[in-house]
Image (cartoon, rainbow, N blue to C red; front, side, top):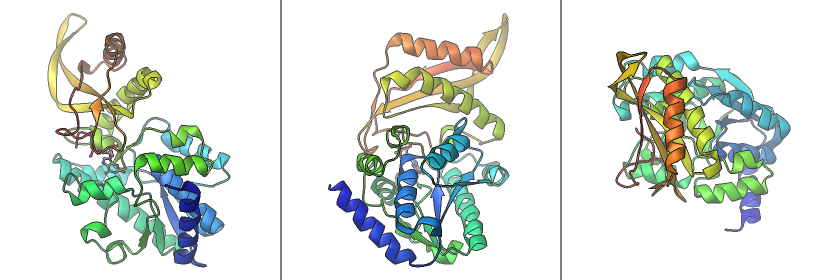
Length: 310
Ligand code: XMP
C-alpha cells in the first residue's frame, strides 16, 4: 500500500463529499477514529467538528487523554457526557448481541442528536475492513456497521456516513496514522472496541461492574506494557467463586486476564506471559480490588474464541 497516495486520495474524496458543508467526526481515541479525524481535519479543517461521546464505558482517564492528545495536534475536541443514556440502554441486558445492539442504538442516537444540533449532514467514522468482515460473516454486531447490513443511517438517524478507512486493516491504519503525524501513543495503541468496557463485562453492564473491570484493566495494562501485546485487558465474569478474606469465607468476583498476539484481529494467539508476571497481576488484582476472589489467564486462540468476551 502506498500510504502517501492513500492519504491524498482520501483527503480529496472527503473534500468532494463534504463540499462547503459541515461534518462531525466520531472520535473514540482509538487508532481508527483518531486517524480518520486527522484525515478529515486535513480535508475540511474547521468545517469538521470533533466529538468524543463519553459513554461511561471508557478506560481510566481516557476522555482527558484524548482531548489532550488532539489539543497537542491543534484539533479541538468536544466531550459530550452521555453516560446515563448508555447505562439506561444497557440496563437489564445480559445477552451479548442484545448488549451490542443496545450500545449501537445509544451510540447513533447520541451522535444523531449532535448532528441535528450542528446541522452537519455527515458523520465521519473510523470503520475498518475487519469490522465489516466480522459483522457480515455474522461473528458479531460491530457497533459501527450500518449500511453494510442494510440499515440506512440517513433514514434511521438523520446523517450520511463517511468511512475513509473501510478498506484498510489495522496494521495499514497504523501506517497512515504515523504518516499523518499522530503520536506513537496513538498509532501504536492497542485496539479498543467501540462498545468499550461493555464488551468485557459478562452479564449486566452497571456503573459498579464497569468500575471494577476498569480498575482491573489498569493493572493488566501496567503489568503487560513491557511485553507490548497486540491487545490485553481484564474481563469480569458473571459467576462468582469462593475466597477467604480476613479468615472469613467470601463469594467473590472472577476476573479473567486476556492477552493476545495478532496482526489483523481476524485470528489471534494467547501471549506467552512469564509466570511471575501472571502471578504478580493476580496478587495485585485481588489486593487492590477486594471484591475479586479469583483471577485466571485465558489460553484460547481465535478461532475458536473471539478476542473480546461478547
Ligand atoms: P473479536 O472480539 O471479534 O474482536 O475477536 C476483533 C477485534 O475487533 C475489536 N472489536 C471491535 N471494535 N467495534 C470496534 O470498533 C466493535 O463493536 C468491536 N468488537 C470487537 C476487538 O477489540 C478486536 O481488536
